[in-house]
Length: 371
Ligand code: ATP
Ligand code: MG
Image (cartoon, rainbow, N blue to C red; front, side, top):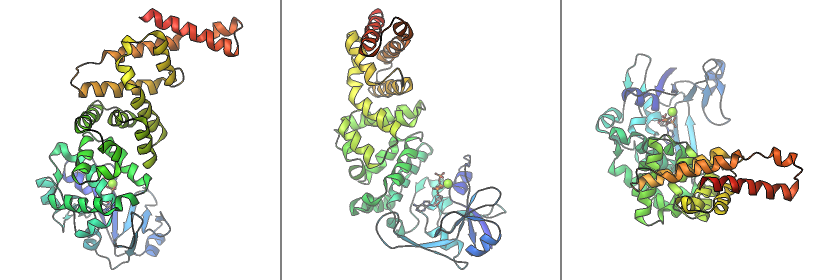
């Protein structure tokens, strides 16, 4: 049996990038042999094992055959006679289909090194079209490596187009999709992910609500997303910056489609609903201002409100405004409302509705001082 480093670890080492996690492929071994060596099986019918000491993933070399719709519809064949070349052939991109042996010798049957040099994201074989997840993966790699000059090969884009038109994208599970989307959003140039999806027709399938925005608004949104990445804002701010110009029903529909985590979903929905108000913050009377702060529950969720302000600020930057003074103003207003102490009112004997009213008056007074 022989063990090789494969996939991202080989690719990123050749690119001179740091390698986070290493995937290994094992050729010439059976599941029984792996178990006898102390490897722990990962899944019942999936030939992947964890190293007894390091916990790293070791997969038996395998081939795949499509057997149904969507991501789950594959039959795996893993046995000691599956070669390294066989295993590499089932991979998505040539730059992901290289292996490296113990001596650092690169095994590259599909031209991965040439494509690395020429900056092509290119499919390995026509079997690429068997897995719709690859549309999202390629778009994600495009977002990650665009700063290095990578782009999708025209023939690969064609296969992505076919997949988008085939209805297969709808068969992806929300979890698999969101995993790719969220990873793409966290890249340095996440707008390239959406540009790539648009170029292959996947945007209108997966992000119909976003795709329906007029082109100038779409461009502004992607620019805001780019800005959010440039300033290293967290996932929820990026997701919100992207969806700021949708209405809140559209945000809800998108969030449900991908089972988006609660923090991202909440912030995006609030941001879509309230960003126009935030733009006029400095013209608001204390009553309206307090209502805005209440909508965000700034007392218990101060960070969420900060995320909102960042999303709005990214949108303002996208429009070419160098600064967004409303941000500091609203930040100050939230701080003032939050600083109103409850205890003196309780000590003074206020309870229930009366306490709520007194607290509101005290907060309004605090906001009035700001104006
Ligand atoms: P990352 O740096 O994002 O981890 P990676 O290339 O290591 O990139 P993984 O998702 O860890 O990506 O997958 C490891 C390898 O498995 C890939 O390099 C690719 O060869 C193969 N692979 C993973 N998912 C697919 C897929 N859906 N279709 C084809 N090949 C895949
Ligand atoms: Mg990996």
